[in-house]
Amino acid sequence: MAACGGQSVGTVPSPTPLHTAGPTATPTSLLSDALVSDVENSDTMDQTPILDVDDIFAVIGDDVTLSVQQLAPSAIEESETLFPAGAIEDWSIIVFKSPGAGPTITLSIMKLATEQDARAVFRASAEGLSGERVRIYLRPGHIAIEPNASGLGSAITFVLSDRAVTLTASLPPDGKPLIDVMELALLANIVARRIDFQLAAERQAPLDEAIGRWNAFASNDYMFEFKWVCFCVPPWVTPVLLTVSDGAVLSAVYVENGNPVPEGGQLNAYETVDALFDRVQDAIDRKVLSIAVEYHPKHGYPVSGYIDYDIRDDEERGFEVSNLTVIAPGSLP
Image 1: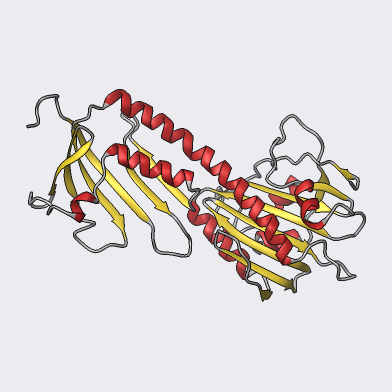
Image 2: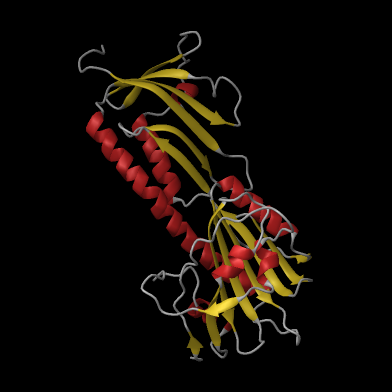
Protein backbone atom coordinates (compact mmCIF):
# COMPACT_ATOMS: atom_id res chain seq x y z
CA MET A 1 0.00 0.00 0.00
CA ALA A 2 1.37 3.39 -0.93
CA ALA A 3 1.89 5.93 1.81
CA CYS A 4 -0.87 8.43 2.31
CA GLY A 5 -1.10 11.31 4.75
CA GLY A 6 -3.98 12.62 6.84
CA GLN A 7 -6.60 10.06 5.90
CA SER A 8 -9.19 11.24 8.40
CA VAL A 9 -11.72 13.26 6.46
CA GLY A 10 -13.82 15.77 8.34
CA THR A 11 -16.80 17.95 7.57
CA VAL A 12 -15.82 21.49 6.66
CA PRO A 13 -17.30 23.91 9.20
CA SER A 14 -20.34 25.82 8.00
CA PRO A 15 -19.11 28.94 6.19
CA THR A 16 -20.16 32.49 6.90
CA PRO A 17 -23.33 33.23 4.85
CA LEU A 18 -22.34 34.06 1.30
CA HIS A 19 -23.46 37.13 -0.60
CA THR A 20 -24.47 37.84 -4.16
CA ALA A 21 -22.64 41.05 -5.08
CA GLY A 22 -19.90 40.99 -7.70
CA PRO A 23 -18.72 37.99 -9.77
CA THR A 24 -20.29 34.62 -9.16
CA ALA A 25 -18.67 31.25 -8.57
CA THR A 26 -20.13 27.75 -8.78
CA PRO A 27 -18.68 24.72 -6.97
CA THR A 28 -17.02 23.61 -10.22
CA SER A 29 -15.30 26.91 -10.98
CA LEU A 30 -14.04 27.25 -7.41
CA LEU A 31 -12.27 23.89 -7.39
CA SER A 32 -9.53 24.56 -9.93
CA ASP A 33 -7.65 27.08 -7.80
CA ALA A 34 -8.98 26.29 -4.30
CA LEU A 35 -6.78 27.01 -1.31
CA VAL A 36 -6.29 23.79 0.64
CA SER A 37 -4.86 22.84 3.98
CA ASP A 38 -3.87 19.41 5.28
CA VAL A 39 -6.55 17.67 7.30
CA GLU A 40 -5.46 16.92 10.86
CA ASN A 41 -6.89 14.24 13.13
CA SER A 42 -9.63 15.70 15.29
CA ASP A 43 -12.33 14.39 17.61
CA THR A 44 -14.80 16.64 15.80
CA MET A 45 -14.24 15.06 12.40
CA ASP A 46 -16.70 12.70 10.78
CA GLN A 47 -15.63 9.12 11.51
CA THR A 48 -17.54 7.76 8.49
CA PRO A 49 -16.41 9.88 5.54
CA ILE A 50 -18.40 9.95 2.33
CA LEU A 51 -15.23 9.13 0.37
CA ASP A 52 -11.75 8.12 1.52
CA VAL A 53 -8.41 7.12 -0.02
CA ASP A 54 -9.19 3.41 0.26
CA ASP A 55 -12.19 3.93 -2.03
CA ILE A 56 -9.92 5.63 -4.56
CA PHE A 57 -7.20 2.96 -4.30
CA ALA A 58 -9.87 0.31 -4.92
CA VAL A 59 -10.65 2.00 -8.25
CA ILE A 60 -7.24 3.19 -9.50
CA GLY A 61 -4.85 0.87 -7.63
CA ASP A 62 -2.56 1.62 -4.72
CA ASP A 63 0.65 2.44 -6.61
CA VAL A 64 0.15 6.18 -6.02
CA THR A 65 0.74 8.38 -2.99
CA LEU A 66 -2.22 10.50 -1.88
CA SER A 67 -2.77 13.02 0.86
CA VAL A 68 -6.20 14.19 1.94
CA GLN A 69 -6.77 17.92 2.14
CA GLN A 70 -9.77 20.16 2.66
CA LEU A 71 -10.63 23.55 1.32
CA ALA A 72 -9.58 26.23 3.76
CA PRO A 73 -12.73 27.72 5.30
CA SER A 74 -11.44 31.20 4.42
CA ALA A 75 -11.53 30.31 0.74
CA ILE A 76 -15.20 29.34 1.04
CA GLU A 77 -16.07 32.44 3.06
CA GLU A 78 -14.44 34.75 0.52
CA SER A 79 -16.16 33.14 -2.47
CA GLU A 80 -19.35 34.52 -3.98
CA THR A 81 -22.20 32.41 -5.27
CA LEU A 82 -25.40 32.62 -7.24
CA PHE A 83 -27.49 32.18 -4.11
CA PRO A 84 -28.84 34.42 -1.34
CA ALA A 85 -27.16 34.58 2.05
CA GLY A 86 -28.12 31.55 4.10
CA ALA A 87 -28.95 29.29 1.14
CA ILE A 88 -25.76 27.28 1.75
CA GLU A 89 -26.01 25.49 5.09
CA ASP A 90 -22.76 23.55 4.78
CA TRP A 91 -20.08 23.11 2.12
CA SER A 92 -17.48 20.37 2.34
CA ILE A 93 -14.68 20.29 -0.25
CA ILE A 94 -12.13 17.48 0.08
CA VAL A 95 -9.06 17.13 -2.16
CA PHE A 96 -7.16 13.87 -2.72
CA LYS A 97 -3.77 15.13 -3.87
CA SER A 98 -0.71 13.44 -5.31
CA PRO A 99 2.73 14.85 -4.42
CA GLY A 100 3.91 18.25 -5.62
CA ALA A 101 1.93 19.70 -8.48
CA GLY A 102 0.54 16.30 -9.42
CA PRO A 103 -3.07 15.54 -10.32
CA THR A 104 -5.92 15.66 -7.81
CA ILE A 105 -9.40 14.30 -7.27
CA THR A 106 -11.80 16.74 -5.60
CA LEU A 107 -15.17 16.07 -3.95
CA SER A 108 -17.53 18.97 -3.27
CA ILE A 109 -20.74 18.41 -1.27
CA MET A 110 -22.91 21.46 -0.76
CA LYS A 111 -25.90 21.20 1.57
CA LEU A 112 -28.54 23.78 0.67
CA ALA A 113 -31.46 25.18 2.61
CA THR A 114 -33.98 23.59 0.23
CA GLU A 115 -34.06 20.94 -2.47
CA GLN A 116 -34.92 23.67 -4.99
CA ASP A 117 -31.68 25.47 -4.08
CA ALA A 118 -29.75 22.22 -4.55
CA ARG A 119 -31.17 21.75 -8.03
CA ALA A 120 -30.29 25.35 -8.88
CA VAL A 121 -26.68 24.68 -7.80
CA PHE A 122 -26.68 21.52 -9.93
CA ARG A 123 -27.86 23.42 -12.99
CA ALA A 124 -25.31 26.18 -12.43
CA SER A 125 -22.51 23.63 -12.02
CA ALA A 126 -23.56 21.79 -15.17
CA GLU A 127 -23.62 25.02 -17.16
CA GLY A 128 -20.07 25.76 -15.97
CA LEU A 129 -18.71 22.52 -17.44
CA SER A 130 -17.33 22.57 -20.97
CA GLY A 131 -16.30 19.45 -22.84
CA GLU A 132 -17.74 16.25 -24.22
CA ARG A 133 -20.64 14.79 -22.25
CA VAL A 134 -20.33 11.07 -21.53
CA ARG A 135 -23.10 8.55 -20.91
CA ILE A 136 -22.49 6.71 -17.63
CA TYR A 137 -24.58 4.77 -15.15
CA LEU A 138 -25.38 6.89 -12.11
CA ARG A 139 -28.77 6.63 -10.43
CA PRO A 140 -29.36 10.33 -9.68
CA GLY A 141 -29.81 12.87 -12.44
CA HIS A 142 -26.29 13.92 -13.40
CA ILE A 143 -23.92 15.48 -15.92
CA ALA A 144 -20.62 13.74 -16.78
CA ILE A 145 -17.89 15.50 -18.81
CA GLU A 146 -14.53 14.42 -20.27
CA PRO A 147 -12.29 16.13 -21.15
CA ASN A 148 -12.99 19.55 -19.66
CA ALA A 149 -11.53 22.78 -21.05
CA SER A 150 -11.21 24.34 -17.59
CA GLY A 151 -8.26 22.18 -16.56
CA LEU A 152 -10.38 19.27 -15.33
CA GLY A 153 -9.67 15.89 -16.87
CA SER A 154 -13.17 14.72 -16.01
CA ALA A 155 -16.10 15.92 -13.95
CA ILE A 156 -19.41 14.57 -12.66
CA THR A 157 -22.07 16.66 -10.93
CA PHE A 158 -25.38 15.44 -9.52
CA VAL A 159 -28.04 16.32 -6.96
CA LEU A 160 -29.51 14.22 -4.15
CA SER A 161 -32.28 15.82 -2.13
CA ASP A 162 -30.76 19.02 -0.66
CA ARG A 163 -27.17 18.06 -1.56
CA ALA A 164 -25.39 19.26 -4.70
CA VAL A 165 -22.36 17.06 -5.40
CA THR A 166 -19.41 17.53 -7.77
CA LEU A 167 -16.49 15.15 -8.36
CA THR A 168 -13.59 16.37 -10.50
CA ALA A 169 -10.17 15.12 -11.60
CA SER A 170 -7.56 17.73 -12.48
CA LEU A 171 -5.70 17.65 -15.79
CA PRO A 172 -2.01 18.32 -15.03
CA PRO A 173 0.48 19.69 -17.60
CA ASP A 174 1.59 16.19 -18.65
CA GLY A 175 -2.03 15.32 -19.44
CA LYS A 176 -2.22 12.28 -17.13
CA PRO A 177 -5.08 12.64 -14.64
CA LEU A 178 -5.44 10.23 -11.74
CA ILE A 179 -8.74 8.95 -13.03
CA ASP A 180 -10.98 9.05 -16.11
CA VAL A 181 -14.70 9.73 -16.18
CA MET A 182 -15.72 6.06 -16.13
CA GLU A 183 -13.63 5.44 -13.01
CA LEU A 184 -14.88 8.69 -11.53
CA ALA A 185 -18.41 7.34 -12.00
CA LEU A 186 -17.54 4.41 -9.71
CA LEU A 187 -16.57 6.90 -7.01
CA ALA A 188 -19.71 8.93 -7.69
CA ASN A 189 -21.83 5.83 -7.06
CA ILE A 190 -20.04 5.26 -3.75
CA VAL A 191 -20.69 8.87 -2.73
CA ALA A 192 -24.36 8.65 -3.80
CA ARG A 193 -24.94 5.46 -1.79
CA ARG A 194 -23.39 6.93 1.35
CA ILE A 195 -25.39 10.13 1.04
CA ASP A 196 -28.46 7.90 0.62
CA PHE A 197 -27.74 6.34 4.02
CA GLN A 198 -27.26 9.78 5.57
CA LEU A 199 -30.57 10.96 4.16
CA ALA A 200 -32.35 7.79 5.31
CA ALA A 201 -31.17 8.37 8.87
CA GLU A 202 -32.28 12.02 8.72
CA ARG A 203 -35.71 10.99 7.44
CA GLN A 204 -36.27 7.98 9.71
CA ALA A 205 -36.08 9.71 13.08
CA PRO A 206 -38.98 12.15 12.45
CA LEU A 207 -41.11 9.30 11.08
CA ASP A 208 -40.49 7.10 14.12
CA GLU A 209 -41.31 9.98 16.48
CA ALA A 210 -44.50 10.77 14.55
CA ILE A 211 -45.67 7.14 14.63
CA GLY A 212 -45.11 7.10 18.38
CA ARG A 213 -47.27 10.22 18.87
CA TRP A 214 -49.99 8.82 16.59
CA ASN A 215 -50.13 5.46 18.38
CA ALA A 216 -50.47 7.26 21.71
CA PHE A 217 -53.35 9.39 20.39
CA ALA A 218 -55.41 7.50 17.85
CA SER A 219 -58.12 4.88 17.88
CA ASN A 220 -58.91 2.64 14.91
CA ASP A 221 -61.91 4.84 14.04
CA TYR A 222 -61.48 8.39 12.76
CA MET A 223 -62.42 10.80 9.95
CA PHE A 224 -60.25 13.19 7.96
CA GLU A 225 -60.15 15.17 4.76
CA PHE A 226 -57.69 13.86 2.22
CA LYS A 227 -56.35 14.98 -1.17
CA TRP A 228 -53.73 13.54 -3.51
CA VAL A 229 -51.33 16.08 -5.02
CA CYS A 230 -49.96 14.77 -8.30
CA PHE A 231 -49.97 15.12 -12.09
CA CYS A 232 -53.42 13.52 -12.17
CA VAL A 233 -56.81 14.52 -13.57
CA PRO A 234 -59.96 14.97 -11.48
CA PRO A 235 -61.52 13.25 -9.65
CA TRP A 236 -58.23 11.75 -8.36
CA VAL A 237 -57.05 15.07 -6.91
CA THR A 238 -60.49 16.15 -5.63
CA PRO A 239 -60.63 16.46 -1.81
CA VAL A 240 -62.57 13.69 -0.08
CA LEU A 241 -63.78 13.03 3.46
CA LEU A 242 -62.66 9.57 4.54
CA THR A 243 -64.15 7.53 7.34
CA VAL A 244 -61.80 4.88 8.74
CA SER A 245 -63.06 1.97 10.80
CA ASP A 246 -60.88 -0.77 12.31
CA GLY A 247 -57.92 0.64 10.37
CA ALA A 248 -59.57 0.45 6.91
CA VAL A 249 -61.38 3.00 4.74
CA LEU A 250 -65.09 2.49 5.38
CA SER A 251 -66.45 5.27 3.16
CA ALA A 252 -65.42 8.32 1.15
CA VAL A 253 -67.46 11.32 0.02
CA TYR A 254 -66.43 14.37 -1.98
CA VAL A 255 -65.94 17.38 0.28
CA GLU A 256 -67.42 19.84 -2.22
CA ASN A 257 -70.82 18.17 -2.60
CA GLY A 258 -71.08 15.22 -0.19
CA ASN A 259 -71.55 12.72 -3.01
CA PRO A 260 -70.07 9.27 -2.34
CA VAL A 261 -66.92 8.22 -4.18
CA PRO A 262 -67.80 5.36 -6.57
CA GLU A 263 -66.89 1.87 -5.49
CA GLY A 264 -63.87 0.33 -7.23
CA GLY A 265 -60.42 1.49 -8.16
CA GLN A 266 -60.75 5.11 -7.16
CA LEU A 267 -62.06 4.32 -3.67
CA ASN A 268 -59.23 1.84 -3.18
CA ALA A 269 -56.69 4.58 -4.02
CA TYR A 270 -57.29 6.48 -0.77
CA GLU A 271 -55.13 5.66 2.24
CA THR A 272 -55.47 5.57 6.00
CA VAL A 273 -52.99 7.33 8.28
CA ASP A 274 -51.16 4.04 8.85
CA ALA A 275 -50.98 3.48 5.09
CA LEU A 276 -49.49 6.96 4.65
CA PHE A 277 -46.86 6.10 7.27
CA ASP A 278 -46.14 2.93 5.28
CA ARG A 279 -45.81 4.97 2.08
CA VAL A 280 -43.22 7.24 3.69
CA GLN A 281 -41.34 4.26 5.15
CA ASP A 282 -41.26 2.58 1.74
CA ALA A 283 -39.82 5.75 0.18
CA ILE A 284 -37.11 5.90 2.88
CA ASP A 285 -36.26 2.23 2.38
CA ARG A 286 -36.05 2.71 -1.38
CA LYS A 287 -33.77 5.76 -0.91
CA VAL A 288 -35.83 7.85 -3.30
CA LEU A 289 -34.66 11.18 -4.65
CA SER A 290 -36.77 13.44 -2.45
CA ILE A 291 -39.05 13.10 0.59
CA ALA A 292 -40.71 16.02 2.34
CA VAL A 293 -43.26 15.24 5.06
CA GLU A 294 -44.84 17.47 7.70
CA TYR A 295 -46.28 15.73 10.75
CA HIS A 296 -48.91 17.05 13.18
CA PRO A 297 -46.91 18.55 16.05
CA LYS A 298 -49.09 16.98 18.75
CA HIS A 299 -50.75 13.90 17.29
CA GLY A 300 -48.11 12.80 14.78
CA TYR A 301 -50.21 11.99 11.73
CA PRO A 302 -48.87 13.33 8.39
CA VAL A 303 -50.55 16.60 7.42
CA SER A 304 -48.73 16.86 4.08
CA GLY A 305 -46.18 14.90 2.12
CA TYR A 306 -44.32 14.92 -1.18
CA ILE A 307 -42.24 12.09 -2.66
CA ASP A 308 -40.16 12.31 -5.85
CA TYR A 309 -38.97 8.86 -6.84
CA ASP A 310 -36.80 9.75 -9.85
CA ILE A 311 -35.52 13.06 -11.22
CA ARG A 312 -36.05 11.81 -14.77
CA ASP A 313 -39.79 11.01 -14.56
CA ASP A 314 -42.96 12.89 -13.66
CA GLU A 315 -44.06 10.37 -11.03
CA GLU A 316 -43.97 12.69 -8.04
CA ARG A 317 -46.86 12.24 -5.64
CA GLY A 318 -47.97 14.29 -2.69
CA PHE A 319 -50.89 14.33 -0.29
CA GLU A 320 -52.66 16.62 2.16
CA VAL A 321 -54.52 15.66 5.35
CA SER A 322 -56.72 18.01 7.38
CA ASN A 323 -59.55 18.14 9.94
CA LEU A 324 -58.82 14.76 11.48
CA THR A 325 -61.35 13.76 14.14
CA VAL A 326 -61.28 10.62 16.26
CA ILE A 327 -64.64 8.80 16.37
CA ALA A 328 -65.80 7.52 19.74
CA PRO A 329 -65.80 3.69 20.03
CA GLY A 330 -69.16 2.20 19.10
CA SER A 331 -70.35 5.26 17.17
CA LEU A 332 -70.03 3.66 13.76
CA PRO A 333 -72.57 1.13 12.56
